[in-house]
Amino acid sequence: MSWSRSADKEQQAAQVSDLCRRRLLNYADSFQELARSYDLEFLPSEGVSQDRQTILEEKRLWENRQAISGHLNEVAKIMTETACEALTLYPMEARKRRRILQALAEEGIRAENPCYFAQGNGKQAIVLTMRAARGQKIAAEDAADMISVVLDRRLQLSVSSPYTIESVPRSFILEEESDYLVLTGFSRVVKEDEVVSGDNYAVIEAEKGRMTIMLSDGTGSGEKACRDSERVLDLMEKMLEAGYETDAAISMVNTALFAVGEDGNHPTLDICEIDLYQGSCQFRKVGGAATFLKRSGDGKVEQLALGNLPLGIFPQIEVKPLCRKLEDGDYLVMVSDGVVDAFEKEDYEDRISEVLAGIEDSNPGDIAERLLRIALRASGGRVHDDMTIGVIGIWENQ
Image (cartoon, rainbow, N blue to C red):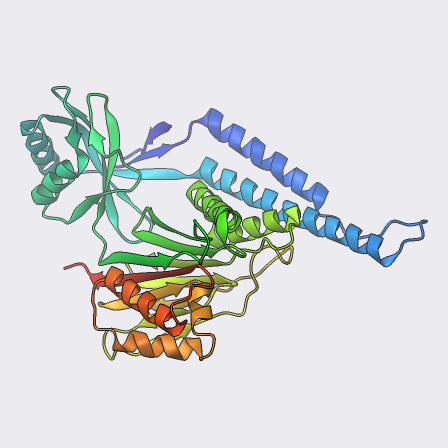
């Protein structure tokens, strides 16, 4: 990381060093060149009498190469963005800086150079270096609380910052508290005669007040279905953390499963992304059951569904997000196919909507547990498939 100062000495920019930047850009060029080598027009082999099966195999190979080309271009894009990324820091007012350093010093924390920087979402964060003066470990959240009091602002430790302040100097980022808070609750039951569930879920907190909730239902049940859905969530989480856009990450996971070509390995994937500053969400569904949005005002329940097939069936998929504005007290309910099967003799979307409208619990975990019990009653107490219910509640941050 290198630093540069503007001519008027009013701001600083932190970015990768010139050497690293050149290397990243060279790597990006190499990946783009490699992508072009895969991005060729489909031409069946000439001069050879081919049957339909041979042509289909060649077409499948070409489709795989097209997908690889797209992913290589995506990697090149991320490398280029990283190489050119710069973090512009603005100096803090001298009086505020002195108050922060003094308050932290009284608690045994030595801090250096607190600065402002814009996060790109209209919010202003604070970055500073801190270390414990007497060799002890101090919770970084305590320091964030002290700085919040000094500046009269609601600040919280960023997801990427260390949790503790130790003797070694470390950088910390304090973000403005989000305008909304989220609580999640999950309830699930394993299919009869199975030990583990084929359903898995993940909750990911990211920078800039974003939260992602994912639910994947592996094909079938048992250990193999569990491994398949775990693998999908693990790949998605790694790629999102690496900087992939959500749609690009979904595409890459889909291509990986399609290229393996395993029959019966087509997990579903439900994704709910929430912006806690804006109070908005985006849903992406790849073969999953409907998601339900219960409004706080009138208690009405909206069904959110898309007709996409599960992962790995086609070499390329296009998933269009559903966008909704959230309000204080709204609930999002994600369910796996096992819950749908429990209402197989009924119109499950309408039945679940009716049940949710009548539930008066406010805790997401209680709502998930109550809905699961109702699903079990609807199936006569039998569990023919893994059932998983995730409830996400959103409230204004008072």
